[in-house]
Length: 330
Ligand code: PEP
Ligand code: MG
Image (cartoon, rainbow, N blue to C red; front, side, top):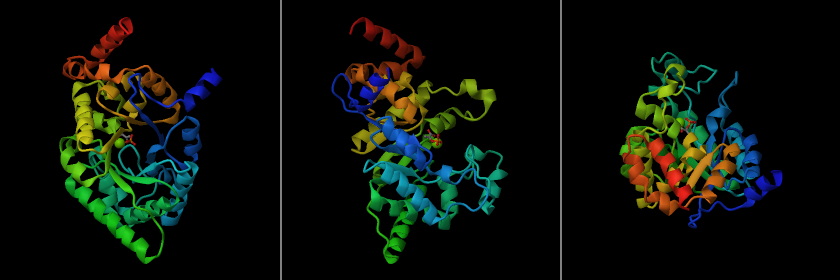
């Protein structure tokens, strides 16, 4: 079994019909990078940078401390791409330390709908630019991509790109090296999925965050046990938003990945391939089982059944039926 898994790690992830699929890792701290490589990831699709900010009593990490952390992840990945997401603070990821704005969100009635993620960053311009400079500086040591969480408004996109331009200018003035980096948006608010063509004109790539997309589409708090049974990734509304986002990104010629739990759940692998997804980002421990699914899937055959699943009253059973049908007539 060990030998089989190690063989699998070096096996390229290609579908039965020859479609190449990129399997990336989600990491929380630079120390997770070796596990990503060990699992056979070809890059980091989501570095949740807020983990550098959480669970600490004292000061928040400044530019240099962040730079060291990003650089160490980038160096550990040895030239493979590392997608660093700007802090997704707030809601289910609160800070220990209080700043004026944290106080505001502590008291928010509805923190998931409050000052979190890019909204929080844009409300703390000095801290945001510190993080952007730290990420840019890490780009001198490998391939860095920047990812923006919770984008819902075009203005947030524009303000982020302006902050990035300002951060670059500051680095030029300080004679600190950096490379050009691609900038992507998370699609995790239904509004972002619905205005995706406009967002795609501003961003180089998108990454679909199904965890929040489910929460906001179904109006189910992802952390509330009392409604956990209604948190349904198989809901047709969720699947339609995911399918539509993948199709629109592809037709705009931009790369698209899924980095929410759905990407690492083998129950969704065939369906996501059918939607045209060719880049999945997940916890390193999920890579081998998703890869095994990919190796056994005829993506074209599944794509032929996509509409049927999306229009079904019960997409989950529709997928189960397809599995049975394809297994009976391989
Ligand atoms: C998501 O929302 O799907 C996602 C990947 O981000 P997080 O789980 O960190 O909110
Ligand atoms: Mg999210």
